[in-house]
Amino acid sequence: MLQDTTDLVAMAEALSRSADYRVLRRLVPRPASQPTIGQDCRTGILLDTETTGLDHARDEIIELGMVKFDYSAEGRIVGVRDAFSAFNEPSAQIPPDVTALTSINDQMVAGHKFDDAAVAAFVDDAVIVIAHNSGFDRKFAERYWPVFEQKAWGCSATEIDWRSHGFAGAQLEYLLNGTGFFHQAHRAVDDCHALLEVLDFVLPTTGAPALALLLETARKPTLRVWAEQTAFELKDSLKRRGYRWNDGSDGRPKSWYIDLCETAVDDEIAFLRTEIYMRDVDPSVQRLTAFTRFSCRV
Image (cartoon, rainbow, N blue to C red):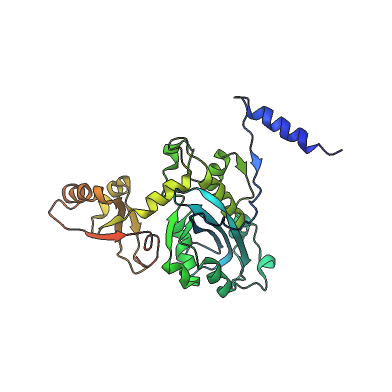
């Protein structure tokens, strides 16, 4: 005999009122709706890709998921416009570890090919594209579809300090659980629907949706400082400082680098001069915005 769903709802509500229990509800994607006439809204895209590997120049996208949504100037999500989901058959077999992670196998993608015109049309009217690892997804998306080169991008994984807002970490599953939901992870469009709920969650520390904080961060320029030709034995000091290594294979310098807000650059250059180079140097500094950040072209 099936359990009456009204009983289940009542039990969930009762458990939620207790400090000894936490209830997670299965995420049901929001239905599509038309924007409210007369309401000042902007359109964004949530994007996720599943790929055959980590190298954006060589590996291939096997699944693309997107959710188009409208949001207010205050960063509140107004509604979902549409969703996009498509498979693509790669030129070689999908590696077993990718199938284990995503559940996507060769049979599922056989015969499928992205409709490039449909992708471009879906994205065309969006003012921002958000991914939960834009440093990864943007590079793949730009390689396949030039429309993404012209868009502003935000990264929900790195442009919000989730731990400072009470979350255990920045992993999407952790964030979704923190908002009271669970979902089928590692499928592209499902992850986009999950991210929508995470960004619509009102942060107790700010009293505003997480999307508002992400947009505020994304709009601010950042400066990338390159610490070129540093001694090998200083790598640990640079890593502790937050520097990341670029191997030079993408046309950018073979060097350590760090991204900072504008107010922190002078202190960082002083650190390099006194602790790394031990002399007066002028390291290369690159200005990044939402239109260039995370791109493989900078």
